[in-house]
Image 1 (spheres, helix red, strand yellow):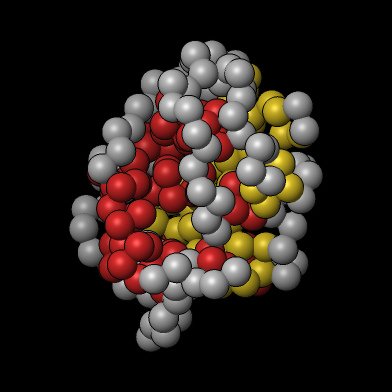
Image 2 (tube, helix red, strand yellow):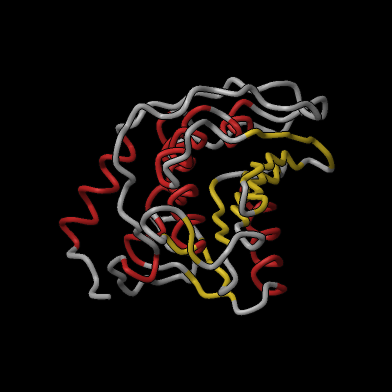
Length: 222
């Protein structure tokens, strides 16, 4: 597949940043609320890091939003931050419903343990798991990220415009990981088939699209 032009990629990312975000979910350890299916008709394009334009960046972890802006909220010992709760909120749920053209929003359950908020989306094809590890600061989060990348099998850095300026990588079996401020976000689609939905989107592309949807929420509401 030919790379999209930088202009088209920039427009796509700008559209993500303009999207609204919602963080309301059930208490950790309970099933998340079931929302109506997305009203949008067509599924979005099956973009993935491999089809986005890339460019060489110095420093290994990239710049952009990662190097500036307001830091994300500190983790709360009593529960996840509002930003972490967004991974089980309406925006990623509606995005997933639209991409896969589901008749209704998927059932979710969530959990909070070891400073990690996990939201599991139950799909007919398998489970999609989105998790956010909350660190005490950005440096500690980057240490977590580097360790995860070192241990991941067949990890490939996501570079250029595709990483939105954050350290990021994907794995060959369908997982995408990003580090922003004090958060490490992982969208794990490894339990899903290689292709799914009416557009036969790859699980890697699905993981990437959901990651950028959540990151757009975090950028809009730091």
